[in-house]
Amino acid sequence: MSDLDAAWRRLRAAGAAAAARSISGLFDGEPDRLDRLTVEAAGLYLDLSKQPWSAKDVAMALDLARAADVEGARARLFGGAAVNGSEGRAALHMALRAPDGADFHALGEPVSAEVEATRKAVFDFARAVGSGERRGATGRPIRALVHIGIGGSDFGPRLVWEALRAPAPAIELRFVANVDPAEIAQALAGLDPAETLVIVVSKTFTTQETMANAVIARDWLRQGLGEGADSHLVAVSTALDKAQAFGVPADQIFGFRDWVGGRYSVWSSVGLSCAIALGPDVFKALLAGGAAMDAHFLEAPLEANAPVMLALAHVFNRNAMDRPVRAVVPYAQRLRLLSNFLQQLEMESNGKRTRADGRPVTQATATAVFGDAGTNVQHAFFQLMHQGTDVIPADILAVRNSADGHADSQRKLLANALAQAEALMVGRSEAEVRAALRADGLDQAQIDVLAPQKTFPGDRPSSFILMEALTPQVLGALIALYEHKTFVEGVLWGVNSFDQWGVELGKTLAGRILQDLEGGEARLHDPSTAALIERLKG
Ligand code: F6P
Image 1: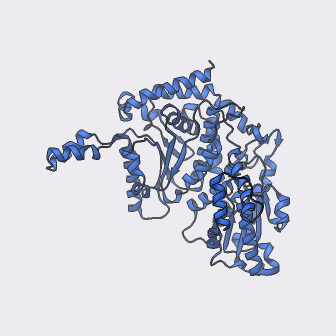
Image 2: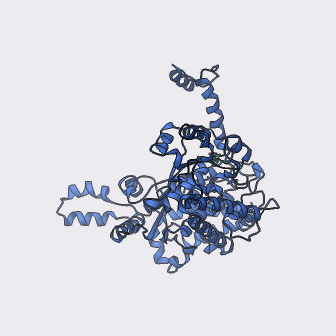
Image 3: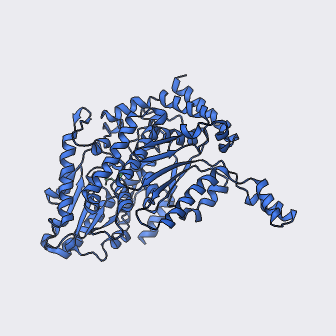
């Protein structure tokens, strides 16, 4: 048996013992637990002490990381090797956020000079639009941006904008992802084409949803502006020729390379709309935060490495404790889109049953991620989190200082974050509940019925991420933390975290069914699909 198989076997076996003991009890037996299981990195304080692992389990998880050669994989990632084997590509999003003067290579080819040149072009354009130097076709300043893109061309910029935007921004930024006409109708409503830039963001410039929306927006510009309309079109893509053919002026097309994965692309020109609407300095600070997390990931020893330790905690839950779902709950309204972002980052990266070498995986892979902002979720799914039949580990995030004033509300928000994490772990014993009911004067029969219902089992794990303030740097570090965490998990499971073949079949079938709906010759479908097609055609 290989060292890796043995390490997996030991880790999995540790799950039964972990399930049989209490997390709170671990603090008694491990006086150094908090010290060992908290990591500070790039402005983030990560507390993994409310996880079900003992000191011995943590050591086992670290052995697993060594047996899987996480450090070697990390060196290949940063060295620009073909870590995306099925597409023969590097994955070098770190090059995009590295300071000027860096020297990254993708498959041996130097890339940093081109990154710097593109970054400069993005910032120059952002500055010109923001300052009013670059105006619309009729001479009016630009007051709104419509960012059209989906998946990786949407989630990152949308998250960054919602996290960092001013309550009443000078330049409004609206996003359109869905091919559902409702979204573009709402995005364009009330905007004046003379004061609006349409930014089409698509790595491939072929994605059905994005191109359908881009055509609608282009028509809207042309109807409103006639001749000058195309000067309001901007594109971000690796397919420069396709963007130009669409009508985008060449000097308004911003490129990036195929070694930037869609879900890792917010640092590239894909962030253009944020660079304009938030300003280049804010975007630079975001990049600097990502770079700070890169440096930490590269340099910190495994046991004090935030992305590695977060990955191991999640893997312990997934593979030792058989927990297939994880909740992500930021106690920060500005981070409410984090779970959407992580759904793509983690589930598209690691939702795979075949290893990078073509063999079946030997462990369960990515967890399903869901979540929303606290405290709202306390009035939604937290009932299940506390007393449901399944244990759902959580990532709980909180920000000490709000940029939005109202310190009293902020303290209430923080109190709720801490309370939920504590309640999940500590629970409330039946004996305690019985004593309280007795003190309230209930009779024994009532107590027997009520006490079990009011009991909280506890031992529901969480990771806690605390930030001083949601600055652009801290946000950059947070996104990079999850990117690297996802990479480490991919290494442990042996999957390629940078391809996404699982999204292709649906796209192909949608193309065929669209033809069927448009009256083309009906193809063979399963009976259920055929009936639905007929119903929609009728
Ligand atoms: O969901 C599939 C996917 O290929 C993602 O990986 C990608 O982020 C998204 O579609 C959008 O692709 P594009 O940027 O090429 O329009």
